Length: 300
Image: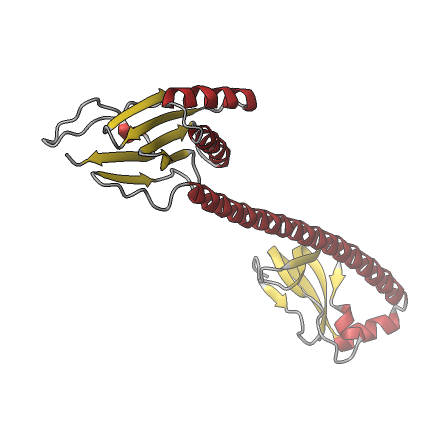
């Protein structure tokens, strides 16, 4: 037989008995398939195929394939039965061999099933872990969306409409939530508070810090204090309450609608600039570095 030549296949009718004279043969289940299983290797002096002869009309229970060049001695059913009648001791020897093969097959099958069970358990555990991660990811995404909605609810939906002044604002978070904020609000008769701030870093921690800073500024601004005094009080509150390394830069000013004066205080934030009717600007600032900006325009 040539290398990898099939002698017979699983399910074929059994008509002959074989003895290996030279070489090796593989005994396989599911031959030439992805789940091919090697049951045994038959070497010189070993025999196989007797089950198909002992059981009339029997079929091969496995496939036999040559492993390299092989030489076999074959025996028909009649020859086999005649030999066992003349040499009864051969039947006992074959029974022992069959028992050993059956035991080896059972052991191999058990090991294969154990391996498959471990692989299935590993796959199940990985799938379960992936499902947990997916659920956690979805939960975090929902929480981030809630945080984004809360953050947007803190910012004004509409800015005051005042004669001789236009107000506009835009916020573009680098992530789903961030630490930028702004506001324009009345602080008294004929007085408008203008606020813009930026919390260091991004994400949920910055959004939480932003909400705290905004609430403190609004609370102090309602007392009617000057912009500088409001910043001093808010700074005192934040440094007393804050236990992390986060910080916020803020510009808060008060626009007097009667005198058109804008008095402001800065806490680490860039200064505002004045845009004149001819298009020239007064004090300049590095605005592109911020995710939020505010601009007010006065109509002369």
